[in-house]
Length: 57
Image (tube, rainbow, N blue to C red; front, top):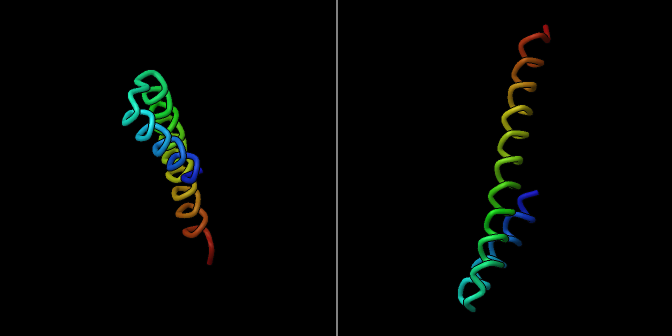
């Protein structure tokens, strides 16, 4: 998932340099959304790991 974030970030940077403001904004927004989804899934995974670890003998 982080590969997609980096891909869209690079697209946004290139589009911004070339002057395609609409494409740059859209690519940056997609990268931001995917990164937020990644963070949410990471936190959920971390919490589940901590909860399962405390239940083991």
